[in-house]
Image (tube, one colour):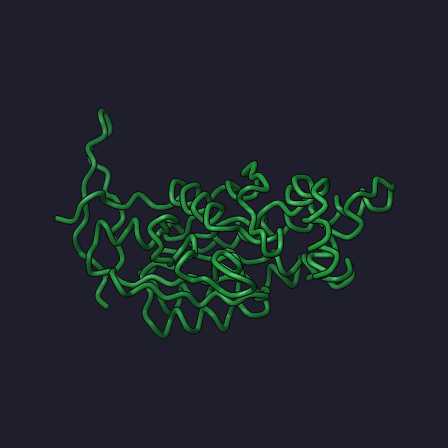
Length: 272
C-alpha cells in the first residue's frame, strides 16, 4: 500500500502553515489482551471488533474508525496482531507481522503482562523489558521507515485494585482466576508487606512506561506516546469487564480510544 501523499494544511494564526500527518492506508495493532479486546463482548474471548485501536465497532470508535472516516482507502485494512497474554518477549513477532502487511500506522500497548504474573520474582526485569522494546522499535524504523507509531502507556494496575478491592464479586474473580496476583492477591489486606508489594508492582509498571518513552523518543518524530494518559486515567469499575474484572469492557475500550486518539498524531480532518 502506498502511503497517502495528500496532506491537509491547518492555518495557525501567527505561525504560518502546519502540515498534519497523512492518513494511513493500512494500520496494525500490536499488544496484549487489551488491544485484542479480550472479554469486551463475551466470556473469555477476544473481541477484536471492540479494540480501542483497530476495531470496527461503532460504539468504541477506535482509531481505525476515526481514521477511516477521513481516508476511505483505509477501510478493510485494519490488522490486529495483539495476542492475549503477550509480553515484551512476543513484541518482535508482532512487529514482523506489521512489517509483512506494510503497515503505515502502528499502535502499541504492551507491558501489563510483564508485571501481571504470579510472583514479583517472575516480573520482567526493567533492563530486559527496555532491550526488547528498543530492538522491536529499531526493527519497525528500519523496515517501515514511513510508518507512524503510537505507543499507549500501560494502565495503572494499582488503580484497578483500588476501584475493585471493595467489590466482593471482583475479588472473587481475581482469586479464582488468579488474575494479576502480583497486584491483586490479598486485595483487602492492609498489612505492610501487601501495601509495599503493590507499590513495587506499580513502580515496575511506571519503569516500563519510562522505557517506552525513551524508545519512542529515540525512534524520532514518527513515534508518539500518550504522555502517560492511559496510566493516569481515573477509570472506574463500570469500565471493566464483568467477565473477569480486569480487562476493559466496550465502554472501557471506547474511553481508551478517545483519550489515546487525542494524544496521537495531527491527522487531517478531510482528504483532499
